[in-house]
Image (cartoon, helix red, strand yellow):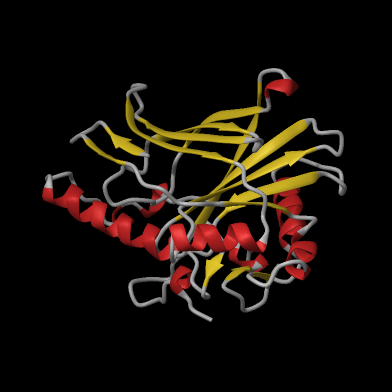
Length: 265
């Protein structure tokens, strides 16, 4: 669900499905499924280098990339930490993730850190560290952080993201708000869901219910962008404020560069 409050009200809600992947079990999942494959061509595929890869680090594996990225930001984690990634995989070779969420726990289940990996339609990514909030048994993470990333032409770059996340369990609850400098909430985005076990039967059922889910997401993004433009919401071009686009992974080279997130195998 997205609900924009300013400068024009705009709300939409639609159904999708996401994958919650234990990064230590990707190869086991690949071996047990005819529909899913890690770094393979399947109906659904997960490619390590679709996430968190910086220049010169391709090939280390997604968990190693995450732990190295966190280490570079002063957060040292044990190698046996458990990492769950909530994301959309490639569908028939196509991938687009508006945001993916990493949840890091100790082997005993204690929540340690979360990371929100925000993407845009230029193929860029920006990860945000989200610390634990409250007691460990609450399994909550929260942070209010400067955005400094071009996500939507209808949102300013100098606002803040307010992440409010719960560790994946039987229910999934994720919330991201756009917050202005004066504390006013401009936009609320939520993801609510319930857990299903990953097996070939369930994958087939969800495929029939939500066919080509990633294509549906990108089409809805452009459809709602048109609706916002039609309502007269101010439009910001990406080239306008480069100084407010900081710490971006896979930076977009320019207007003629290919959109990496639309790459097809």
